[in-house]
Image (cartoon, rainbow, N blue to C red; front, side, top):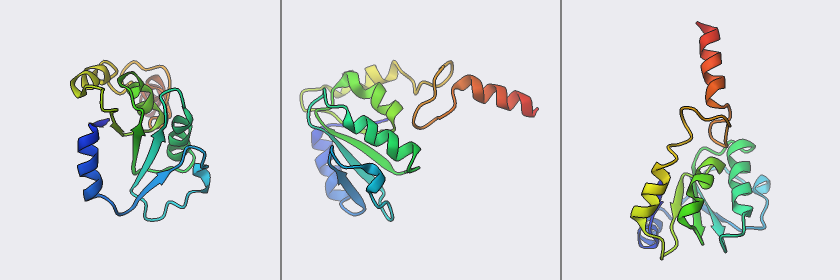
Length: 138
């Protein structure tokens, strides 16, 4: 997952204004036209509001959106692992959240790769299912 400070996000927004959609928390991602969209910003108005997790999951799994899903707003360091599992691939940290701490926290959960027992929005099958499928094909 790519991590951005609010300053980095402002600079990045200037460079990428085209093909970006900002989806409101109460909007249904199933109704969003995705033609030509490369990035979708989902907003957390406060850290206790989890609607953006559901939106990201729906965009990845049901809509099969492969572009960038960016978390904005009240994004805290301890939310990053769940955001990544829900389908976010970029997070803009709240101004008081240190980037170095966020990087350490995220490194503690290395993509839920080897040894994971659950699938997520990006990797639907758990790790052991991939291993069993590959072994059966040999």
